[in-house]
Image (cartoon, rainbow, N blue to C red; front, top):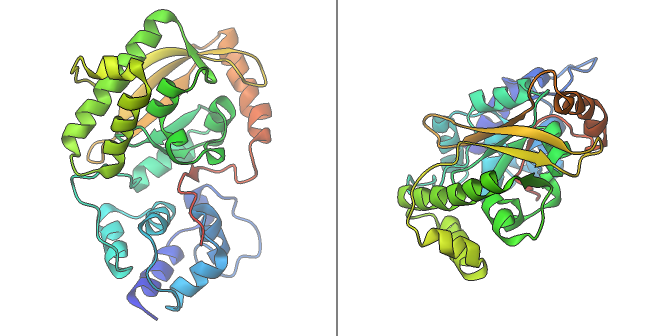
Length: 289
């Protein structure tokens, strides 16, 4: 067995179903998570995961290792070792971090009663819960730039989230300013550079706001989810930054005792059932092998 196979097996064995938001089930003989559970959560084929653990698969991709690191709740140091064991360069500090730390995973696991998603500094969604998917649409149905908040906001004619005029202006300004700040912190990230170039080329609105050279971070806004099964829901949006990782946890809430709060509670029951079966917290890797 290779070093990669050994650490994958060891890290899989130290987790139980409850640690990753799965039901415990009955008659479990294996210690830790089953291979099929890891494969499902990471979006990798079971056959390929078996080959990795047995040392029969070589040269895994960086995206696959990133998905396994999130699924196995690895620390930054463990993630880096996984990359080295897989023969992949560890992400540099000049690149937007995408690794979701175990504490952030636990927050998503526990807060199933509010719509919640985790985004990178470039505003790519990397993790979400079923209620978020019920509010905004399932991110698994989107690929590439279509999973990026800024791209969708500046290039789509109409989304599933609306703003009043004041909040729409502030949100758009904040997104452009936020991306400028991220570009300064992560000058070596090619994906972020391509995103900004395409937005400047294809969205006159973004180009105008970018030209102001404003630097800031988006922190809060008021929105209306317009396309839910229970009708429009007016929501407060708050953005929490994870210290040491630059990830953003975006949380939607409704004021207690309001009709919007009642709709959100109803959606937590009816809407989540319509979201596809793996309704525990989901990573956005879309990895397959």
